[in-house]
Each structure stands twice: as C-alpha cells, then as structure tokens.
Image (cartoon, rainbow, N blue to C red):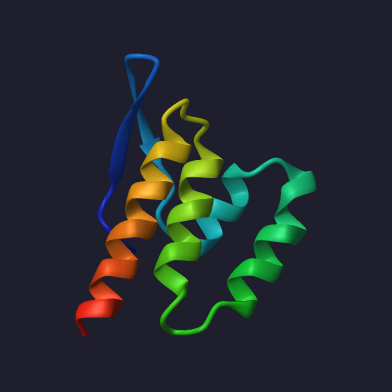
Length: 82
C-alpha cells in the first residue's frame, strides 16, 4: 500500500485515495465502470496518468483540471526527452 496522500479542497485538507481499490471505492457508483475500463485498458506508459486523473476525480477539487493539464504537459515533456 502506498503512502497516504493529501490535498486541500476549499481550504480543508483531505486524504486522496492512492490505490486502485481505494480510488474505485471513493468514486460514485455510476463512475466505477468507466474507471474499471480506463484502468484495465491502460498500458505501462499510461497507468500513472490514468491513476492521477481518477485520484483527483475521486476527490473533487476546483483546481483539478489545471493540475491535470500541468501533469499531462510534464509527462509529454518527459517522453520527448527520453
């Protein structure tokens, strides 16, 4: 099990699920099938980005889209350097 992750939502510190079972459990029931499809379809080079996306979706955060965009840019830069 990974270390506990935390973020702030509207000034309140909240724990972020950081394992596949924890992320799935934190999602609304109607989103779990989509999560399962995304996780099961992710390749080795995509799994971290897919998990980050769903981690943040499991904990609503008004800045999530900005964070996801930055993470995607960082990932694209890492891949172009390698």
